Image 1 (spheres, rainbow, N blue to C red):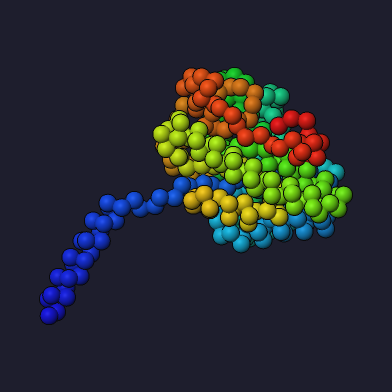
Image 2: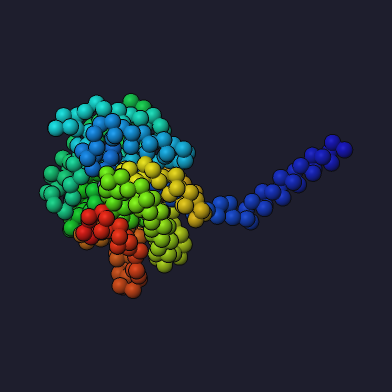
Length: 321
Ligand SMILES: [Zn+2]
């Protein structure tokens, strides 16, 4: 009897291991969420208490989702009138204490297309001082760099020089596949808050989630068109009031599209990120299109990208995406 039981167990184990090889392990697509312009976009628009409240809400809502997140810091935003302000540094400490990661987004958010190589390198080093120290205090390493405006150089020489500089300083470039204009919705949202328009705020929030869904669908399609499959994605959003409020809704929508949230490390394991990229255009476009342009794809490949609704554009006061 004992022998039969053991045999039964062994056959059972063999059966299940064969089954797990035959069936797909994980049919979910993968996405990493990255948040730029920490501690907050338009930080000087908010007095200190308000800033703290928005930031606390952002961290609380992110934490509630139990997913890996990396935030990219502009350390100039830790200063008030040219001096580092401990109240702003505390915000980053809260971020790290919530188990979230940080990366470098330069000191003052300049475009590589407007600066000399030397000045841009200074911006990278000046932008890492506090972030690196805070991470090290928590036994974490500063690893990722994100180009402001996703502008990576107007010549291959500039692009390669900065990439070499980053690599010499042990940085990995953080690419973006799901590019979007969340910041336009965020600007409209802040205006609605300032004028106490609760209904407009709700409308902007709803439109924002719909727009992000259409963007993810679009980039999925572009990924399949280029690679024949949905690659691991990297989503870019910004630190602002809109995302502080709507982060759980955004995650709910993304989950409903059958995505699993992964770290940036894990997302970048996808072979797609080894694709050649010689893009030197001015636009801060998705890496999927950089790879497509590098491969010489023609105009019809790029199709119609979803646009920000006109009323959001008008309300935000921003002229173009
Ligand atoms: Zn930025």
